Length: 296
Ligand SMILES: [Zn+2]
Picture (tube, rainbow, N blue to C red):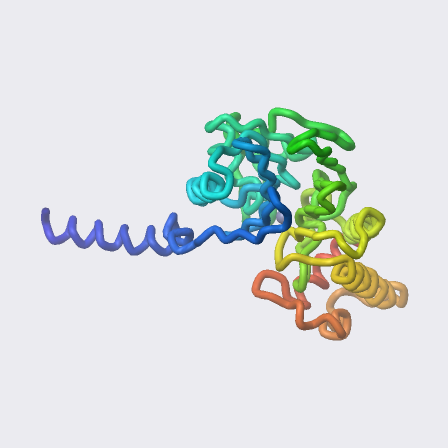
C-alpha cells in the first residue's frame, strides 16, 4: 500500500468516525420497568415503549436504524422473543428510523396514514433533506383517526391527534396498565420541537396536551417523546408552558410587533431551565411565531 493510499484510508476513517455509524457506537439501550410486561427503552432518539406478550414484543417507536440490532438484543434479553409489531407515533427518523430493519425482520408496522405518506416521499425542511424511505420501511397498516389492537390480553388504544408536533401524531394508551406514550406531542423538561413544515402547530400541541390530560390520572405513567418519565402534574406544567408562551407571543402580535422586537427570554420566563441544545428560547419563539403566522 502506498503512503498516499494509506493516508487516504486514514482520512476516510477519521471522517466516517465523525459523521457515520460511530455516533451510535457507544449508545446503550437502557430499560425502565413500568409494569410486569411494559418498559420504556432509552438509547439515542425518541423514547421507546416496549410491551411484551410471551415471545411477541410490540414496540412504540424504534429510534434510529443504526440502533436496531441493539434494540433487538434488548428485546431478547427482556422477552426471550422478537418484535412482531411496531407502532410509529410519527414519521421522524429518531422515532421511526428502525422501521426498515424491523419490517425486514417480520414486524407488522402500524401508523397514521400521514406517516406513511410523508415517509414515502422526500421531505425538505430548509437545508435538511430526508430521502423517501424504502418500501420495507413503510407502515403496513394505517388508520385515519383511531385504532385499537389487543395484545397481552388488554386493549391498546392508538389515537390520532390533529396537527400537533406533525400532521400524523398518535398517542398510544394502555388503559388497564395505565401507561400513555405521547410521542413528540410531549417533550418533558425541555422546549418542544414543532415541525410546522409537516403540519405541526402550537394550537395542535396545546389541544394534544389537553386531550392527554383527559386520559390520564394521578397514577398514569406517561412516556414523553423525549425526556424522563412523567406524571399528570408534569403534563399540566407543560400545558401551562405552551399556553403561556402562546399568550405572550400573541400579546406582542396584537400590538403590531414583529419577531425582531420580541424578547425570547421574557417569552419563556419561568420555564427557561427547559432550554437545550436543539431548542433554545430563540428557536422556540421562531417556531411559535411561524406557526401562528401560518394560522396553524
Ligand atoms: Zn419528532
